[in-house]
Length: 153
Image (cartoon, rainbow, N blue to C red; front, side):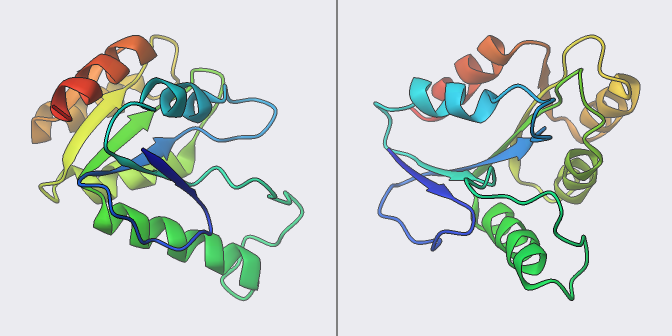
């Protein structure tokens, strides 16, 4: 297993790439990405992790900001190259970008697994999208990891 964090070079020798779409809001969201990565250490997979080690929340959220642009373009490129996209909606967050990414991927034919625990403020919308597009939906991170591991064998 290798982990490629934003904005790292998207190049790997692993047979399967997994993009981690989901709640990142620093200080609010659970660091679910680290948990998932540790549970996949024995698998031949490239984890494409957008949780940047050195993110500055004061960066202007504009494509005119080179750091912001680099992050967004890395994420869009990584999603498009992933064999599987997993989503985690932390109930303590709003996660609007995760909702956007879900909409972006839902009708694309990408293999997706979505985890949306009870308490997420737009759970009904997530359920509707998953139902409409036949996307696997679970309510616990443990179930997400279980389904992901099964898809990697």
